[in-house]
Image (cartoon, rainbow, N blue to C red):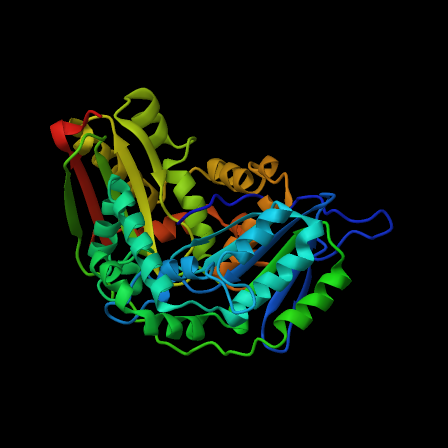
Length: 448
């Protein structure tokens, strides 16, 4: 999973007891944050949801951390292994306990982090804390189990390769990046996935290196007894004492000329056209991540002239969108068009480039920028209906930016963006020497 939409959290009414006073800090939540002596960050957010709680564990390890040759895909693969059991709770026992309480329980991996999430009854939170602390401290699996799961991951790759999106992502990243681990997807290179069954010893190294308390944040959102939860967390997670490894992530050298890559897709689908420029890392101390969040909507969002022209009026494209979100390291700002027909490719490409030139020349609609900022901050408020909705957004942005209040601060940065900053960004980054173009043409010219 590579993308979640940024939902509004800034103005969500906090679920405070009647006797409590509203929070005066920038977050709307009565957020409590503790850092254990071993470095584990524990965030609790009361939410008006009687009898329900969301429990999210964020480990800041993703495909960006896969630096050794031949060992790509391990962050995603290890997500699977984390469900294999411990000496105390052998394989299958955790699943039975979690199911007995009715928890919705799963995980996902991105370029920059991995998230384990459970959502269900408050009555099961004590059991869940014990289970989670046990597997993060004491994961155990035998080599036969490891080999079996490696084959399952290979099967997952084969399932995904039947869709053009995986090939597009592989080709785009492999063309745009030459050194940084962002050059491969979270699934990893195919040859590395095939070789995984022989990497049992390395998998143990991966666990020791990245699954450490000082590289982990826990988010608990919903209805729970804070004092009791923290007492148990200190007892269960306190003995976890591994330290985060210091591993150098290779930087990506500057791109100096336009790159292109083409895919002839052997089956019927719609043609695709992607423009992707190298872009700065997402941080909370610079406006780059916030600029890109606004810029994507400004260029190809539903209020944009491009959307009106290409999708609604001329109907040259089935859809247009931006495929960008903040990353820990410099990544890509990408615009993606799904074309109605192959013959429309040149017109769509010309329209994209015209819009970018106009912006870089200083032509910017300040009123629309302001409306986009408001829409990002307010438009998706109705999606936050349950603790799980809140927890996943907090976890996502904490995984990228590394701090519990990351989403709130990111949205504050978005609110501060000025129209001229979009112009400056376009002038500096949306230039041909920094551009990678991906094209996909399906069999029979593109009619599904």
